[in-house]
Length: 388
Image 1 (cartoon, rainbow, N blue to C red):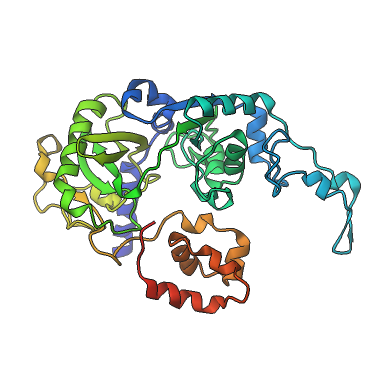
Image 2: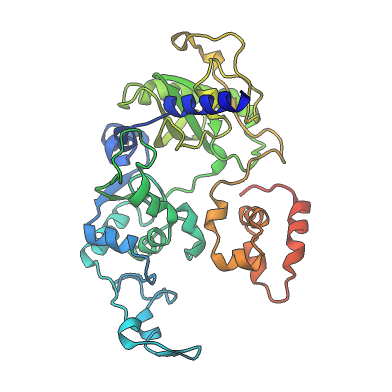
């Protein structure tokens, strides 16, 4: 039956795209940085002590370490704030109300020193993920950190970081149950103002570059279309000169930043599997017959009518996909995860509306006194697509 064939197809695809724990580990920055440091962003790796990992995983009250920047009143002195045992008419036990502030002075000093070594500002991440979903809580509204307090605030508030700590090997074919993805490390990357329109995701299958996608599927960047051939040429040259033969797996995904003609920077690696976002491609395409076809901006594409052996794939056979028309972009995958619960409740749970407003930088409208939230969806629909 059709249902049986669909199930079989999905099972085959999952088997084809299965990855091992070692393949996931190979994508950690510490696994490849030494070999490729000349073509990527300056970075430092800090091993995380077990007590700090336990602090990150603690589901209790969100407290910054006591040595963190005291100007962050949102999380400072929670123990003092809780010392008033009468709140909303409830009598709290003194022992339950007292909170011991965590303390990691050596780790904080190490982070502060490395931030200065990297120019005074960094982007933090753990073994695999950056806390993109927690930028709403940062004073800057971004991942830019200038001291250890900034770093602690972001990584403690992020579900993506929690996923790294608990579930990084969840879908690996050889993972034990439960799979422990440690030891863990904090990565500090020198801060650079990167424009999403210059980021591209590249797919390598059996050591052959088979497709290039705009990394940010949420916007139409008008300046990309005239540069497609130059972009493709630069990324191919970069792959041939710097990446090919330097990564231990035959199939993988890598992200680059193409700033200008002939200037390409390596950002990161990812497994060639379902846990990695395929950008403007679809995974059935990426494991199907080659070459990949489809108009630029078409996230579905169509498989080639006549398959070409992968070792005979030529430069002209490799597509570069971008969002070619405003209004055809895909929703931002992480936007819904980046919203505080009170904002979601205030909007009546309308995540589609909130996601669009978040992408347009208009989330603050929900906090304006007298604002009628019921009209926000219509207002955002009329505004159309805007670039971040």
